[in-house]
Length: 271
Image (cartoon, rainbow, N blue to C red; front, side):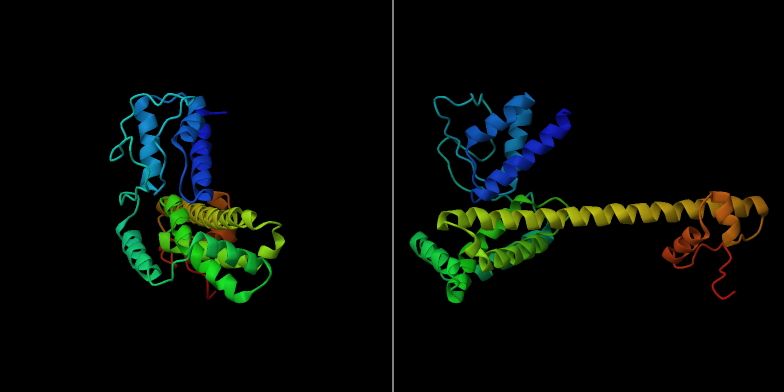
């Protein structure tokens, strides 16, 4: 497998692993995943910066049997730390403003203990509606953490959180499909991640489609200009289609996209 492809897949695996674990991943796991890539210290440090910038926290205590970490310097992290590092460089101003306002709103929600969360889960699995609502509130901050991991991929943080929240609500409504309460958190977080990834994929696909449409329109414009200069007059849709080797429908679609402002082509809409 190409190293660049493997590198991308490795980062994706690390993001997903951290998301499932509530934004946490052990440093040894990171180093083990990176080992096949044979990265130097500088590039390995960049990976840690990337993860840190997406709000992922990692335990930097290296076990006796772990892969040696070397002398990697991680900005803002010392060997005694094991806490979430929320840096702002991964977010633009729009995302940062939204995040601050959204987190402020979440502070008004009640805080529940792990025991209460487990009780809500069991009741939600049994179909108790009030417990479902409370369980959703328990996970809202977790959705923010997962969304932070998926920033920087062409989708606003607000949209990622919204999509994650919708997936959470759907997931809580079908918790009766799970056999054990311990399975529920992983089930819900997978639904959330799948929803966010699908949103990113759709945004990417829409962008690619728009690029293709614009390229086709530009091609029609260029060919029309060439032909008009050659004939020293305006040209017809049929003439452009024949000259460019495309259908008349494609020429008309290009004219429509441009708002009928390709002036060298005669506008035959009323003819």
